[in-house]
Length: 347
Image 1 (tube, rainbow, N blue to C red):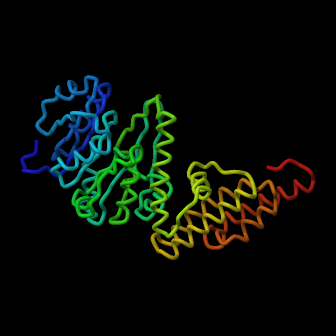
Image 2: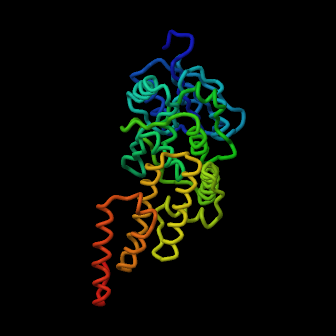
Image 3: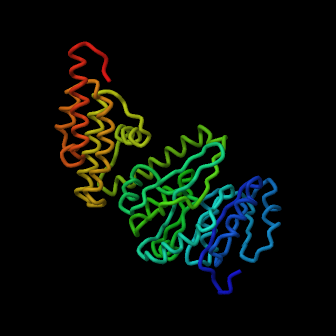
């Protein structure tokens, strides 16, 4: 239990019908190596025995609140932010497990890097899906990746509360299903972001995923978030451009000349927009987009030297990718050109 008037860290955990794994999640927080924290738990009108599980814990660090009606995640999180007393706020979900030194390592990073406002980490999936998920670590790469998708595991983050207050940052309930992605995309305009390059949270994956309706809503909201960021580099994207953008995010590349041309046009438009508005480091931005161009071009290697000419003649190749990959494209295209000439099967 902290002896100070206010704790250094607030751990914020909304709960909705989480009785099955709630005890394990709570224990992982209460047993942290860093102990100077308050643990705000907000029961969002659960209809199961979540309240009973929470009340089994007799720990003065726990501050327990109940919503009289279901507010959903965004509004519940905002309520928790308003209630928080810590200098830093760490998110936690009702079914995940924080590793023993999670709070300590994130706090140390933010204390030693005063220009940073958000710190996440890698996560380890368990349950219905297993494996390590890694995220970009460096601020510039995080900011660029956010133009395409979220770069934080939401329950892994810790953020500096004073920055959120200074820049009036909060969860927007209009972006339910991707409220975190929207928040990060706004936060990146004001301060630096980081991920610690090690696993600090075990993320439970359930066999029953999001419904089709929920997934469609999430995709729609995520497109709004991307559109808002595209406007920062002067781009008002149309539906076809968003389709191309989304295909790059999901690695749903199309093996056609029309698609390759559309991708080239879109990536060059992004580069030109950034040149004008100077939002992202130009070299890093070019290299990032160049990886998309390289992967898309590889699908057309069956066309032989036609593919090579498209690659080598593009402004994307000239300033973005390295000689090793240029040689790789050339030799594979040359082999396929030879096979096509002989009437063989492309590789």
